[in-house]
Length: 278
View 1 (cartoon, rainbow, N blue to C red):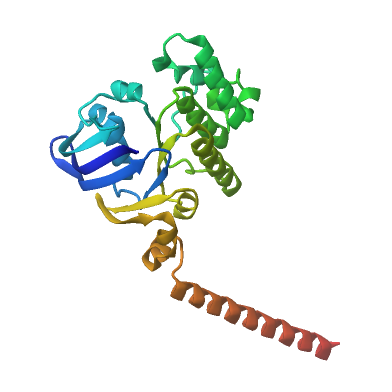
View 2 (cartoon, helix red, strand yellow):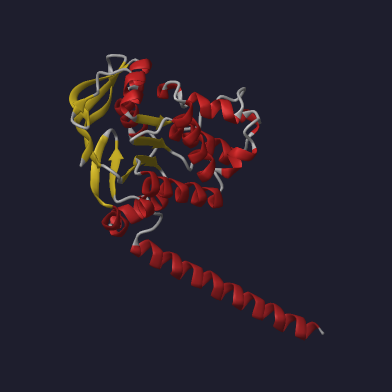
């Protein structure tokens, strides 16, 4: 079932600055969709347009429509969008540093009412995926490591039990091992909880490895889209987002071999000189 549909939207900030220029994308229920691109491409603005957060930043959708389960939501305020089942995890984690881990998670249950049993069940789910948070439940969030804060930000979203989770740069500032762990957990959440995920990332390799479909943005527009497997094999994507094209990779190997040969030659000459001196 089509869960999210973004149809040819334009977003303007402060009634002057055109940021998004006819963006269209879709997310099927239960899928992971990757939204890739360089800094300033408009990825975060796209998420904020969906979640309604552009309204609090003097932005507005001036053209097109955003539909969630067939209902238009682009004119709604963030709190109303959350109640519909959409939760955005902001770039940079944005946890409440002077509140405990438990209090941060409890804040995510604001839209769940006073059903303590359901809230406790949601908390248990979070602790299942992020056991480190359970061990630190009474610790101030501001003293957590970067990886733990990212876990807390995602966990706080899970407590709200969203149908659509908008993740903005979850790998930002994390060590490679933590990045793999976070992405593995994101994939498990999608598979086990049935949460649809729209993932904004600059780490294209990781994002395309867990997503089923991807969109690539440049200068406020979608310039390429397709199944993640095909995007991984696209030469332009390889060159600009995955590091090296096939030609570039061959060139890198040639350079590496040349350096190795020169190094071996230098070591051989040094050994000859050493024998001559002795």
